[in-house]
Length: 268
Image (cartoon, rainbow, N blue to C red; front, side, top):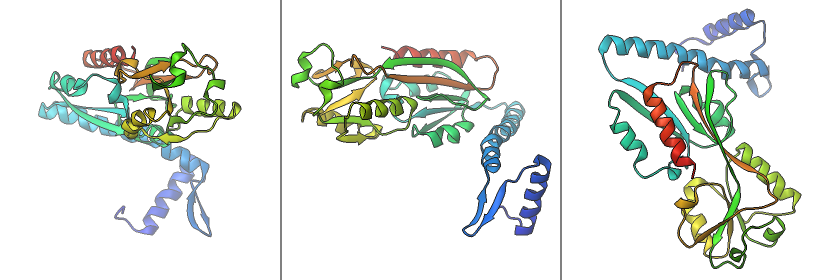
């Protein structure tokens, strides 16, 4: 795949290990495996490679007088929280940029790898890479949604005790908020009837008609009129929403406009 010989690859690896004074690979009966140092280098190297690509891209833009490429990474389901046509309208208003959109599953692997190539990242868990700068952080309490004909819909608020014996739905991701929610469910002896991904949102709404209750932290205005949103008075778990920018330079006017639009629409 590298179009070099195995011997040449081995020499390059040996030279790199010598420079770093660290072992990057080990041989096992199952084959060659990364060490912890190798895995860390793999993660950190993305930023340096991206900086190189940025330099090439910017020089090419100056030379050709073309549009500037701008990559936006966002977790699956985010667009549901924004008005219809929000991103296409924004893109159409800024022809000076060549926008690239990357929708990724909101899981730890995506946060570690796929986000390295983006200029702006919208996610529900903090990013730890040092070259990302947090520019927005919003929280919403996690409550539940249920059909307005459900017996519990007559209450103003619910407790975890109210949920015992109910058929519960939650989202299938590994965000920090979801991990805390799962821990609280175990503490209260509650089990889930359905763990669904963002693409199955319509299924979630259909199951509400059959008496299911779903955990929820989005915008109530996006829900059907026959759906009730109730807080959980003793849950105390927040859904988190972050926007990160790569690099430490000032936000451009375009970025300020984009971030402002997203923030205004994410927060009810």
